[in-house]
Length: 414
Image 1 (tube, rainbow, N blue to C red):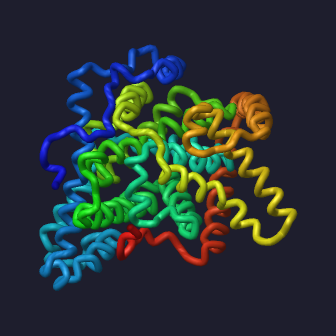
Image 2 (image 1 turned 180 degrees about the horizontal axis):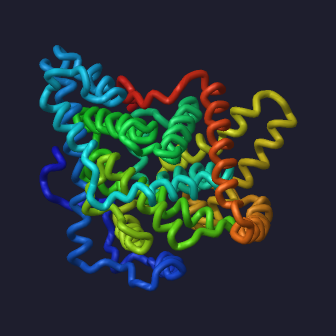
């Protein structure tokens, strides 16, 4: 069966019957608008569960074709991505079409807002990593259907989890570098590599005969790609604010704008990319209604992520104890952000470190208040944050014994 037939995957629930009171109450802190969609809006959103990424999927199809192999299309792709089209007299049409698409600068793009967003995110120091791992990544495991590509490819099996974290960290650091999303910036190129990796996995899953379209929709579909974009933007801001960080309305708007462009480059349909934080809450509501609950695969992924500090602690008893405290703090943060019910469904154990998490917010809030009051402090924190992330990334790459190459697996693990 293909995803071309119009149907509603079983993962979709009724958004007008599902209990969303807490979700809507939380949204009131950020927007006065009613985030519930109309029946017509929800009906328009559901088909995105059945859509892939047409430009990237077409390029993968060309890579797999006899002509693509003959002209070494993958080699040409890497050359154009890194160096541009100069020196290539006759670029094959499928490659030219794809690069015409990603090199198009949307009319709505504001480079100044993108740069402000990068500075805003980088000044959050090590707390950004906490939110990315224990809110954004954990959030991606909430829906059983969305975890299936990871499980089929084995990307987050325990032995591969550090590599996955390194790739995520590399992507985030590259995207938030100054001019990172310019055409030849590291963020632009890394985003396109991740997009092609997703398309390769989508191709493998679609041709595996094992993918359950009726239950899960299309593999790595538009709705799930949007969900990831919201985790890196809307949930990122929410997680940091829960820890005491203070952002102006302009800063929050700029962060959403950066991820709107990053989402465009990643292949998310422009029609569903949020234009504001309020828009993101409306889309998140619809996402909530199209996601199923966590399952055993979700809990396995959570466990693999939780075990990373212990893996890195080695045989030292002291560092193992420190790692257990870190695991407790991270899990307590996730529980505080997602609530007890979801944390329990993800297999996270309650931890007394919740007290430490709650104590973090007033300390950070006080420091943030001082930052806003001291001239030049915000710019200084952005520079220090940038130095911190680059240093941490270098150490991460050294410890992982390589670099983030964003290559799809050669065969499925299931």
